[in-house]
Length: 166
Image (cartoon, rainbow, N blue to C red):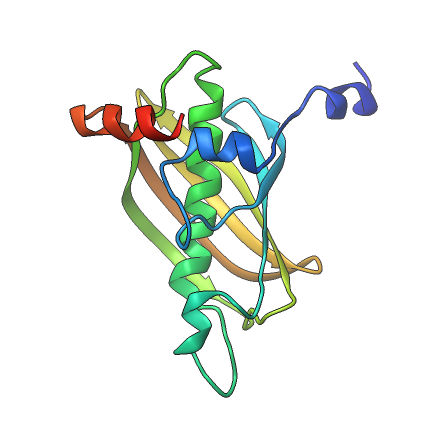
């Protein structure tokens, strides 16, 4: 299989699909689209950063900067959506919980008008627990990175959430 054929077989997720993969909703859904989804191995998520994001009202009014914790959350949402996607179309998504954030580094501020690309790559998985390395990039430059651990958890309450939104 050549590179072009392999690239064509990688998955994508538009916002409608992301709403089925993740329980997050506005204002906390931080991924607009995903592409290059390779099973549970790797993917790229996109977040278009706009000045009307609610967190910019207070962070900071005279110089809007996206909070670093939200950049890490965007990496985690990308990884979580990839994990749920890899379980197949018939899987009903549950909650994806953070288990750990390690080696987080912030290299450059993210401001309105930037397009964040969340590059995630699986380090390992065991059962419903995954560990990913993620880099957030703007214009090809790394602005943040971290190792993220998460687990998919089945809960009775999730069935209500999925029923309302799926």
